[in-house]
Every structure is written in C-alpha cells, then in structure tokens.
Length: 196
Image (tube, helix red, strand yellow):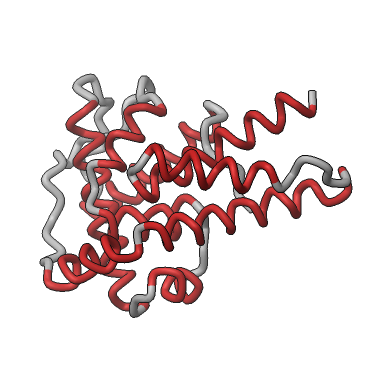
C-alpha cells in the first residue's frame, strides 16, 4: 500500500513539475528528488511531508526555468489582456480528460501558465506567488486573467461536444463558471493533485 501511495505521489509531483516547466526530462529529475525524500518518513508527518514536497517541486521547477520565465514575463507585461474568443454559450465537456487539460495548459506561454498553476490550481497566495515568480502582484492579476482566458479558449478548441452554458451569463461569469467546472471535474475524477 505504501509503495502504491509513494508511486502516486511521485506521479503527481512529476505532473506538477511538467506543467510548470514543459520539460519531461527536467520534471523527472525534480519529481524523483522530491519523492525520494519521503522514503523513511514517520506516518504522523506524511501530510506535512507531501506539502513540503510540492513546495520543493515548485521551487526547483521555477529555478530550472528562471530565464525563460523572465522572458515570458516581459512578453506578458506588454501584452494586452484581450477578450476571450470562446463562445459565450460554451462550458467544459464532461468528457474532458486529464490529457486535454494538460495540452490546454501547455499551450499557454510559460509565465501565464505558471501564474495560473500557482494561483488557481495550487492555491498559492498572490503575495507568495509574486515572490516565487519575482513579479509585481498587479502583473500577476493581469497574467491570471490572460491565463484563464487562454485555458478556456484552448479547452474550447479541444472539446467539440461541449455543453452549452446559459446564454444570459456575462463573459466574466462564463470564465468563473468554466473554472469551477474544470476544478469540479478534476476533483470528481480524482485527477486534481492534492491541495496543501
């Protein structure tokens, strides 16, 4: 049982590192380093260790891509936060897979993707994310909006059989509803990494 739990934890750490870096090789190294630190832990400290491993993976992944992340942040800073190209009546298909979400996230430029992963999926406070990403909190708010719009558009492009949302919703409400749908889908499918 412990071996299966350790394997699942290592896979979750790998996926987090992969989504942040976009590099399989770097992600394997980061996940293995973090997962190895659990080998002989006391069961009492297991939850604490898992939270620490996630923070360690985030820090190592962001360090590994620091230069590319800074370049992406400069591009994002001058980018316009445009309106979403997603149809107003679109919502996430119940047939969306983890692979669909992965492709949709990896299609987003590095800085908006990292911001989205930290703020939305990992639940990191904006002040902490600003420190981790070496960015101004106001830029992170703009970047989060850009990342959410791009994620929505990317998921809409992969789901041709999407279910329609009520037409009376405004664009911001559609984005919020979509995000709630994504999170609920991942939680129900057991595919959302553990929140610490």
